[in-house]
Length: 505
Image (cartoon, rainbow, N blue to C red):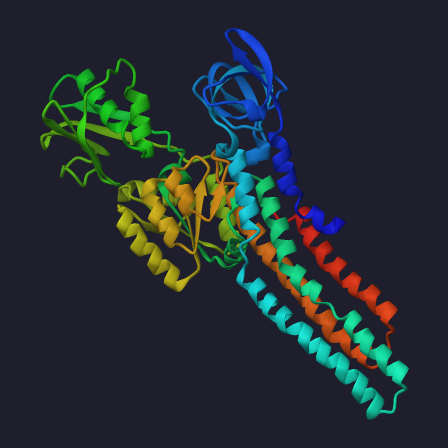
């Protein structure tokens, strides 16, 4: 019981993180309240050394926050006004005030706990095999036990007492428990270890699939790159520059694409609210809106043919009024992540909606051999289906346009700051958004969990294959049989617990 309990401590550890006393500001006065009593929009004061009681947004102050227990990020993160904070993380330096945005079951930590609980209920295929064997194991052992008694007594003239002891020894030493424990204990430990490293795995079957992956496909924007775009060139061909900036700001607020967020950040200064109608977005291509009876469209080269190469075009009633170029940077250590995956035998592919020149440049920098550029969401689905048909394929993405491809891949992997639909479509969520260092860890956890399951099943089968004939031959009395049977269970559980501590990264 104690050994099994250890395999579920990840859930207990995560649950304990939630239980904090919060300092709530009411009309300038600070009152201590339990985390259960926090409500959305409450103002909370958090000082150095305090645990953040719930998800929220910083409204004043600056601090360094230790998010390692949630994201796996080893260094404290510097956060200030308008930055999001996660409940359960700890302020290592500074003081802040936050406005609670999510409480109770809606917080990120609560969702993590629920995912871990649900994940342990999803059986991998290899467990189904173990369950099928266990289902026929008991009647087979009963048959062997009865046969041992009758054959020994009536055909080999063994004393009835000795024949009976042999029969009992067969029942006692046989161990279906080890077969039943082989998979779920390893799955619980694997998912728990992943959760402690900021990796959310949504099912035990996902761990098995991770171990079979041969090809890893990456989206570019926001996955390999930071997604924090800088407007490197902005030219207005018709109209006032500030007016065009304001139009872009108002329209792009209605898109969740990473480029849209960056344009809003770039043009929010001196912006004013405009009345928009008929807002339509064609994923990966353009977004348009009606402003004062004029149709404005912002999009890629797919909406406007130009001899000069620009990233974005702004049209007013189908007439070009502005052009933009944007730049993006690779995430930290992305080249090391790709190199690590190659060393472990994975094939890497870039699948992006961006222009061919930019995709080839990124692929060249990272050593990615295969590139598919200018891919619309429907094109990504087709390409993923092609890859899956020949190899087990994982897709790593973060945007709305990646969601269908994530769902079609053998394994969909999303990032913690991805759009909600991308997270829902994925089988794995990496909570550390700063880099992709958790990706090789994810693949290793999958491989070693499956290896542990196979070791457990091998032991369970081997033990019974050897132990039952020994009992049949009368070489083991029931007392020793009971001891060996319990020892078999302990070995399986101990091997699973070893997965929690062994060096696999």
